[in-house]
Image 1 (cartoon, rainbow, N blue to C red):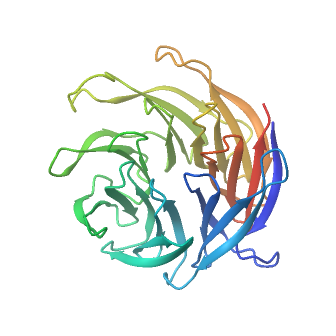
Image 2: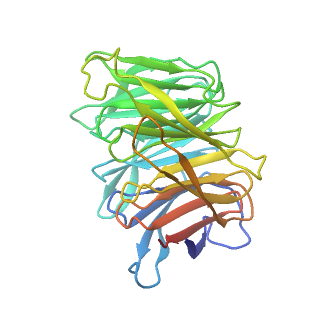
Length: 336
């Protein structure tokens, strides 16, 4: 069902097996960014066609912006900017000019490791989260500079990831404190809209929305994948715009956490990566909020060590990238 079509070392050499934390696809589907423990961000070109041999070619290495490991990378939705978040407590903005990305801004203020940075759908806002338990919202002005809009500390522990809704200025955060939080802009400030405690037993590592933004999946330390649905979808009241858990599945034959999840916007297939080096696929059997079932399609791929991140290509929907502690980025093709 999932066939490996390529293996590429983040640092370029097979002997250099520094951990790869994350990969992120440019929205055009032909560019991939990766980051890792080597303090560098690399930008790759996807060469070839899906019906022939696809491969990644490294086009840029950005290795002078951070002093510690780079934990997260993300492209802006207009494709002009790239952001990286690092254990050195900084966030760096790169701008694409004539096909190359160069550093144009460094955002500082977090008191500890920054775990994630990601642009909103409109690109007006940038959200960051940190080991300092906070979620920061940065706003882009007319000069394309970012300044702090709001600082919230709704979690009691390390915040692992922030994820934007696919069409709205709505954000969800995942934390070491076993909870998720939802945030919305009230016209003046960002506010915490909903708190869901005890979401998982242990750390909530990752979350992903479906294409419409009416469903959300989370994965965690307890090797559980959980489905949430949006209640009162048409409500204009923030108080009534809430989410509830409707299904959960504990993955059998593993005791390791699920670290990453990604939801395919074209075919609804969900992929996860975990501490047991495995990549798994899932599908929601029904869109009904009454009785959905999370179906485990099976273990479909693996790395040598932990799989830290998985991401579907937004243009070529059958292509998946994965990042691992074994130092590699792997490309997979979904065959249905």
